[in-house]
Amino acid sequence: MTEPCHYRIDAFGIALLRLAYSDIELVRLWRNSPNVNQWMEFQGRITPEMQRAWFEKLDPETQFFYVIEFHGERVGLVNLKNVQDASAEGGIFIAEERFQNGTFGLRAILAMYDFGFQQLYLTQITAHIMADNPRAIRFNQALGFKQVANQDSVANRLWTLSPSDYKARTSSLRAYLQTSS
Image 1: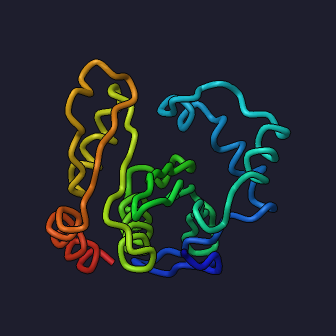
Image 2: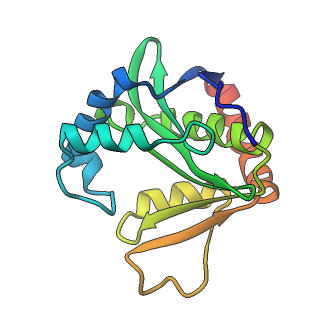
């Protein structure tokens, strides 16, 4: 069983702040924005009531959602959800467009996945990636994700990441972040 107390993660020049009730309206607005919504499986409009109901159902021991903060500015959301049997599903979006082409997504995902593998003792992280999102596919492949077999006809494809593939693929990314900081 995991501890639900991980309220802040500082790594790679950013902070991950555990999602709080006071954040959910901002996250809802981000999630409904066209530049985020277009890459999600559910592309309908999320109402305040839907957002509250979703937040109230989150189990703090199996759902780890964090707001990404850079120099006091909130820029997106990263998560490990449905933690069970040493596995979890990861996800991220950078909502603020001016941060989408930088290293913020990489910094946030490394901090989150390091937390997952090192603190939650995960042996696998999965991700669902829309087939028409080549940028997300390249990003996840750079982290070591591999597409699960027989997904070619699926719109929202399943990918998996092992700790060994993650470690092998991210060593050069970590070195890059250290030199670019």
